[in-house]
Picture 1 (cartoon, rainbow, N blue to C red):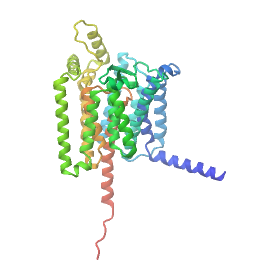
Picture 2: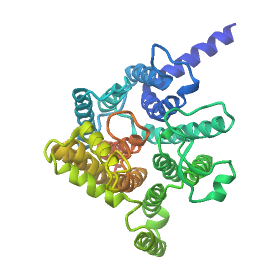
Picture 3: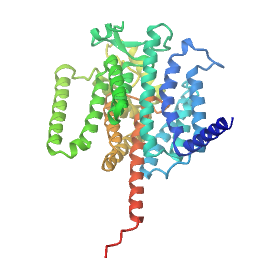
Picture 4: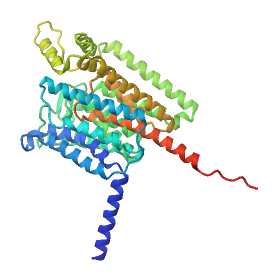
Length: 433
């Protein structure tokens, strides 16, 4: 009896100490994004409560759990000012988008509040560098688990995905899809094969930054999902992230010849990619048309943008036309072009400033040995150039690599300042006499 009481007391003490010293709330928020998205798309076989599907309830309960962990968390010092301003910029875009959708009468769901709540918690009590790194691994595993559940559950007939098929788009590798009984590209619960591919690519990049069994599990699992999506955009994004990760590693920077060989290999990859585009896909899969159309849409209202309703009306009008020049997607296939078209010059420039400030901070953090931030930034650049990975409205899974890049670089710079201060205040050894 005494041993049981002693064990219970020690366990309780450890849990209290752990939740105070570690940013558990942040890990909950990172895992919440793919889990919430998965539950929402699996909702046709799951019971709803008070008219809301499980994904919405999970989102609300998840942010509530994160708040409970946040209250007891005694975090490190505040983030450096640029990181706080960058996160505040995202918060401002979210607030503007939420108000815009409300005024335009566009239907939204309650999980919209997760973005505002999550960003507020992170800005006030940010995670440490170690917690951010652990969080990146937790996020990657969450994506893998949700993807695996969707594949196994759907093939067994246990899960029916709502509002999206298990797969979409014509297969580019029929022999691969035939192995698991699919004849199209896999999208799972993530809405589209390109978005699912980008999430798989982020898992590969994060996996490349860790060591041991985690590296093999994440890289192998992410590569498997990436192969099923057959997304060329995602493959390019993964390559970009891995190249930055490799070139910034000590095994290259400490060896002049290895570094030169790596730069040669990178140049070959770039030339190969450009040659492929020029010879086989000069329109980037129709993206040049989308860019031109959405830039034209922006010109209709350069300062304020056309809003969500303006984009939907524009796409509907084109799809109803007989010209044959059809807008195939309700987005600009580019984060900046889509932002300028929807939200106008001011918020378009704000999006650009968020991207630029994230890149500058990631570059500065490289000198402190933080490589994942720059790798995720390289991933974001490719993803944002060829796709619209997120719309700033919901706690989307693809928003997590951006959040992680900002926090990893910000925490690395804070840690650098802490190390400098400790060296300055440490006693100097007395000279021997």
